Amino acid sequence: MYALADCNNFFVSCERVFRPDLERRPVIVLSNNDGCAVARSNEAKALGIAMGAPYFKIRDIVERHNVAVFSGNHALYGDMSRRVRLTLKEFAPHIEIYSIDEAFLDLRGMEHLDFNALAKQISARCRKNTGIPVSVGIAPTRTLAKIASKLCKQYPKLQGGCYMHRAEDIEKVLRRYPVNDVWGVGRKMFAKLQDRGINTAYDFTQMPRLQVQRLFGINGLRTWRELQGEDCIEIATTTDSRQSISNTRSFSSEITQCGELAEQVANFAAMTAEKLRQQGSACGELHIFAVTNRFRDDQPQSYANAIVHFNEPTNSSRKIISAAVATAKEIFVEGYAYKKAGVTATKLVPQDSITLDLFTAEGDRSKDERLTKVLDEITAKAGSDSIRFGAQGSGRIRMANEHCSPCYTTRWEDIPTATIK
Image (cartoon, rainbow, N blue to C red):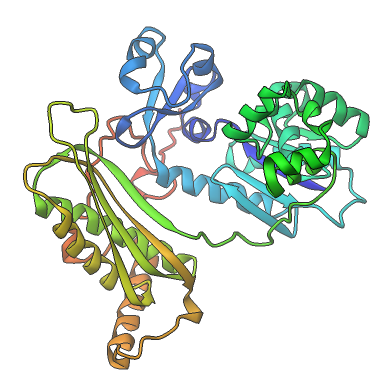
């Protein structure tokens, strides 16, 4: 058995934890630079605000219905996600983090438990410990567990927990469940299914096995088997290391100066290097890009990019920032106004199995390792942005976040104050 714990309207729920006055009020959270709606409360959805709707297009709805608007506060959301995970770890020996607001729990070997009661208990404990509403679905496969968790959101009487295991109950649910909502069914796969009159998850399960494999390959077949209760997607006991790490942002206003673009890229590079070390990886390549504003027809357009190859994979902030800054200066072209830039680390390898470069002096390597260790020690004690390289300038990334809430759990000065009357 597997459980899928899914935080309801996660970004909105994080804001509501510290603002109980927002309960039952429409709330939206915006993307980087307050561009579009990336999270909506149920009340906001009822007003017709679509996922990804540009903010300037829904501003009239926001004003007319007194919708509460927040800029994305990812420091807060990341910390609240960590707190939910700590609670989930109390219930299962192994969990797999699927996203910032979802995690699978491996319940194999725990069949003696009352899974219906367990699902509700996990949901209640998460709400008590963190204030975040969590829907918990338990089923024989991960794909069915995701469906069960969605049922919790549709039916409040389930009290946040749904145990779906009997064949007749699964069939009843699948007969009404849209096939495009099934985990693993993408747009292209859905289009092919529609062409064949397959509209529900149950319809999909009735397709011949060989036809499924011929049309959708091994991944489509796994989804088909999982819907029939066959466990065939292995759950990881730890979070898999990513194959690439990206840090990209749109700027609040266009950048026309080479030095400023290099400074912004340096900050992206610093974040990338830190994430590499956090997951115990090093990168063999670095991709840097800068792009103009495609919505400005009155300006010349450009997509500038370049790749840096390292002779020896690295996660050194000094090396990565230096390479990124030099490349940003190379791809910058005078006369263009850049709206977005980013850094992506690829060709990742485990930090403890790096193939050393014969032409890199051992003294230089040792010196760099000592510097990186000191940086990480200071960061661990004083915070992520407590120390930076000169190329990063002030360390501030140009972003519009006019509606950002306080970092209630990660910044001392933002800790809420309680007043007793």
